[in-house]
Length: 94
Image (tube, rainbow, N blue to C red; front, side):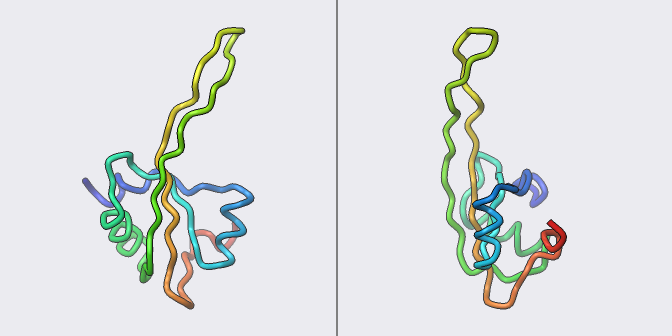
């Protein structure tokens, strides 16, 4: 699996913004990726030093579509903590 395939997209939510102030960045990742692969991908793609990585599965929520019950897709989330003083430049303007 390539590094570009592991990180799908950044999570831009209010909670993720608050975590960025603590040096933690939130990403939507490939469901088969593990902590070691995610740490390597962030380190190589953004040229930063990763301190730790927390991974969790986010299960889909029940929704109604045209009156019928349905479910949103489940996905995997990673919270990556960087070493002190490190930042990811992509998130500077967000």
